[in-house]
Image 1 (cartoon, rainbow, N blue to C red):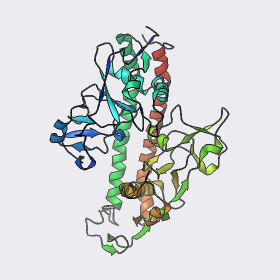
Image 2 (cartoon, rainbow, N blue to C red; image 1 turned 30 degrees about the vertical axis):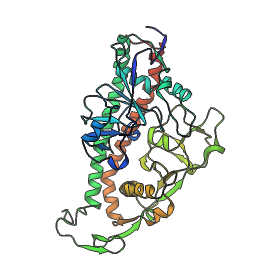
Image 3 (cartoon, one colour; image 1 turned 180 degrees about the vertical axis):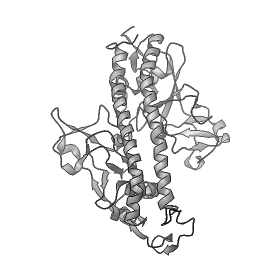
Length: 417
């Protein structure tokens, strides 16, 4: 095994831009379904694709574009905005036709001496991340042009040893993937139960039968402009929870060995990384977050997540959401159900970035079931949420193990036989 380095250009890696010419699709030509996926940077995460919200172009537009068509074993690397996210196109991707937009590049291995999955591992490693920071542009929107990518250095390893590294790391990745699949199914179950009870109003009546489907009485609510079960009330997101906004952490910056990772919107979406900022441990207690806390990013990237990466310091632009009255499952789903509406509101009012204010929360009207019914459903949902959290924490530990092991395998500190 060699400890020498080579460059991506010397490895004969091919970089393929998207088509940025006159036929580049405008916003009105992007569809919610269609012939060809038109990837944007939100679809590419650290090692995986997020297809929860996909845009398409039709076949006519696809044929007008000259570049940027994706093939199996291609890597897709984001090069603008959120730089350095990467994922690998495999045969189990659920789309036949895919093109990239202008915020990313296709990285294609053209020889039998470079394993595509090994290249994916390299792009996910801190060996690449450090170079990415030094080679990227200093503009207002971070960029990593192809001209800089070509000079990125990577370990010059024999293909057979690359495959040994891939086999070792892929075993960890597979376990993480299985955990994620289980969690996706569990999350679908809890959402179905919640919707069945509090959206379709088919919670069990006194006889254990579905309320609305068996003729349970509903009445028109003037505030909500809809029918709700008799005896139920209306409320707002503001009234059912407490929203603590994080702090500007500059004055709490850690200088010693003891610190808390600062959880900004990036960390909330992509996890803690080597360049995550550090805060003192003696910050105000309310700004400390723990596993299981519910976070709501109200600025720029609007999202709701249950935190699972250990103790951290909550940065501004994120609410920690709690309640003295209602269980977490209730305000979690009510926030989730309102999220698409919030995103629409943010788009309508944004200048440089959209954001949700306290007034929006006060105006967000919701159906309020009786507290006894909310608590009854929470008894069913809480054990599932707890299992989801256990699997997330296990996956986070495996990710840390993988990210610690990978650089040492690549630079020869640790070897596999």
